[in-house]
Amino acid sequence: MKYCFSFIFFIFCITTSQSQVDDYINKYSKDCENTKSFFAEHKNEFDNAASTCGLSAEFLFAIVSPEISQFSYLQDRAETYALKVFYVQNGKDYSDFSIGLFQMKPSFIESLENYISANTELKSKFQKFLFTKPDEKQARVERIERLSSLQWQIEYLALFCVVVNHKFRNAVFVTDKQKLCFYANAYNSGFHRTEEALKSVKGAYFPRFSKTKYRYMDISVWFYNEILKK
Image 1: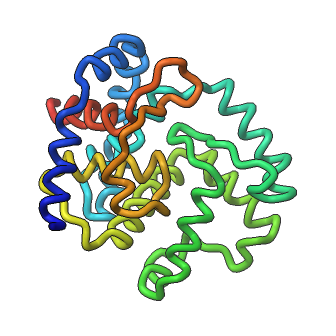
Image 2: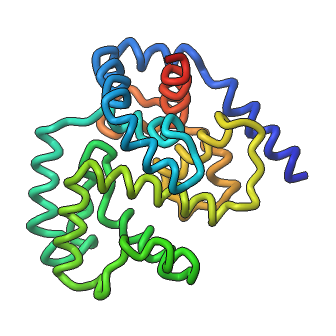
Image 3: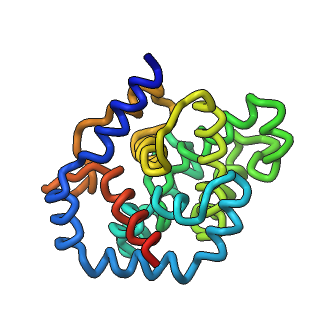
């Protein structure tokens, strides 16, 4: 039954509405070209991060490629400032904006910390990501500093993949693209969700502030295919 469900998900993933993907690419053509150029410029960093989680640089990049294609420097500056003021002082319940090229939230980072802290093997292997006193102000200051760094965001992306791989280690994927659909859904909607929920995402919710919505995983797969052509 599990293999049957996996096959159904595979069919669901590859039979996406191509017209919707084409619409996104045409609407954000310059942004998409800039996003592909970003990968070419930073491929070495993605390669290094990918080596820590057993995936390819192209796979890692594809997970966050939709976010990169929607990045706004002005919005990022405003939301980073808000985090420095409100999150640092009072925590994620007061401010939890997505910042950086990969649009990561402080709560996302805290969730990764909590997951690896709860596992002895992961905690030992990824100690560099943890804080001695994670709930104190200084830890929140450093989280925002890290999230303001592209290098740290790339490392957090690899850590996210480690966590997803560990949590869903029994999940079956027919192809890399099917697996990418799953990881992209987990990144976009949260790795706290169940395997079944992440394999059955139907709605189109991306970009957040756009009137026209698309499925995040569809855009990820498009970028993945484009990069593999190079």
